[in-house]
Length: 125
Image (cartoon, rainbow, N blue to C red; front, side, top):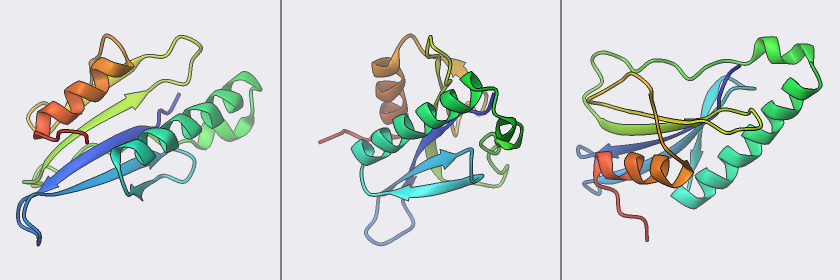
């Protein structure tokens, strides 16, 4: 089952320096969607998780066309961290980042958010 994810990227080479970018992976469209804030990203993530869950529960044939978030490019020198959520009844949260591109299970939603933010030094307002 494809999982939506929230990616936070720190761009040190842009103006203003240390710009933070939030994106949500939409497995229905197969694209990252830009978000204004961490909180709008988390809200959109929850919406997509519910949409994927409904497809799964209803055995909708469209679930076969869902796409996983792509693996990061090897030559990507930006600092990023990402969390993803399974759409099953018992949510599973996983994180990865620029130093460790493999997914690792998080203990909870709060832990996944904290880990993702900490990996790039983002402090939520």
